[in-house]
Image (cartoon, rainbow, N blue to C red):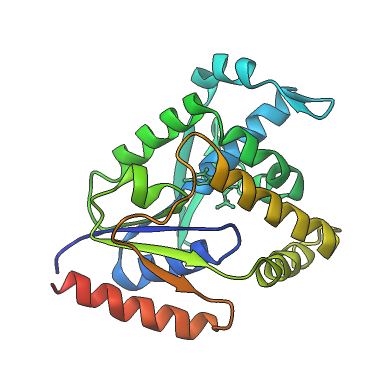
Length: 229
Ligand code: DC
């Protein structure tokens, strides 16, 4: 079967990574979570006191970008790759609300984006890849054969994220999560560097009122049609 590149973009907590993982598994493709890369750079900034007193020292972070090594290591038990920052598995540490609060600011920095986009394009040289993020169809792989733009209402997305964090044992309030979702939407779509936009040729998918199973089946069928040409 022909191997293609699948780019999935959209607002935060629209279930991009859930869908991307399901598609990758069904098609035997590699899944790359680019949000995890921005989150790992954010964690590095936090661990190295580049986030202090409520501000991010972007210039210092740019100076230290060469100290950051990011790797995805496939975990056969989970069936997908986990994020490693300088040799350490940070999969859990990058999903906290405090990382979520800073990540959009880190993702605004042009030098950070340049470094991560280069890594992503390198990973995409082999076809048969599903990559999700904010700029995959617009910047990283504008030539992707299948581009999906995912959206859902902010309230639905906040509720999903709220439940996810509660299940993981984090003490969070729904109001805080909704505020974070709305703030990130705003920053992600208004930043100067590669703002979140619907890529030319992408299909929009609103899953506000759709279950995971139906969503997967629809997009999987669509992907198979694209692959079979
Ligand atoms: O997908 P996520 O919520 O884990 O992404 C975390 C943040 O990283 C998100 O607020 C925006 C940023 N991001 C980005 O700017 N470009 C990407 N390709 C992926 C994520």
